[in-house]
Length: 394
Image 1 (cartoon, rainbow, N blue to C red):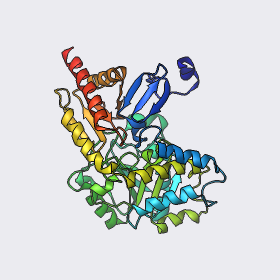
Image 2: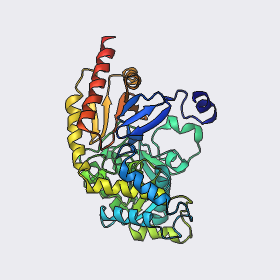
Image 3: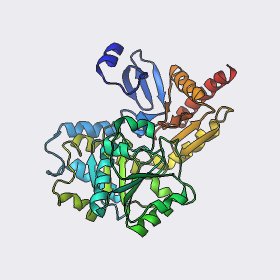
Image 4: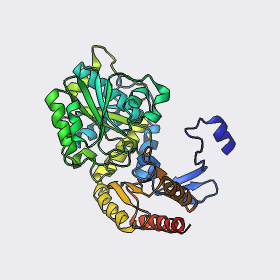
């Protein structure tokens, strides 16, 4: 299938990994030759319960037997979407009670930016250097990486950038600012955590000038960091929370959540302030509901922090300079991009899936399913260490 894949399915890079997939189950993906690959990536954090989780599959099949798409978003009462948004509200602060469901994280970012402008009547948006929020035009405008943006300009006007964790930059948040948008933990930049109560200080400055705070939890949300939402680690509640990836349990989804008062602004002046055909799709909402239910009712979140410690204990090597991140959102930092590339590619040959981060060329992504076992962690880490030994000896 490779020629057809390259000729007919549009590509995102000159050199895709091009592994032909046969099936997947649990923590493993299998190629067309039935070779097993231990998955330390989980669809780039999108499969928190692994592959083919029986409760997720059952929810999808049950909903398919009832109905699929019946009406554009928000017009009909559809149980999976209502139950999903209700469950999110149950596990969020009282200021975050109304959720708009979308098809992807980047679409949720677009909705959040629109809502902030509508609520404040201001146009200025402040984002962070080395931020990644998606690739649609609004999300691209708040990406803090010019090399990925320059070919698509002009983008949204009135976007300014601050340095993540730089408190001196907070004075740039003023009464002209509609919103500040930040990743709770910077992903593409190399899994950079906020330090010295940084997010609390951003929150305080936003409150002082009447700006809204948007936190992007598309990657760190849904249990990945050892809390259901990453902001719970940092004593900072956003005005608008954006989620995606893991929320869908392997199905495409995004969501932005705010107060009912804020979200109601999209109903009028103008009407249809944000619309979508397939957002809240009942089959996808059923998958997300099953995923969120399993994560919140099980001990997976608690186990995530213990599994982090096992990774940190095992992954000790002269070519591992640092392990960044929290929970099962981890990144190995090697001495060079060449070593990182070699490790990822050689591990795939050895039956272990690792991946890159967008902007930090020395980083190796480790974001396995939350359901990964200790034995599987040990298996994968053993392969990493063996291949690092091979690289070191060359």
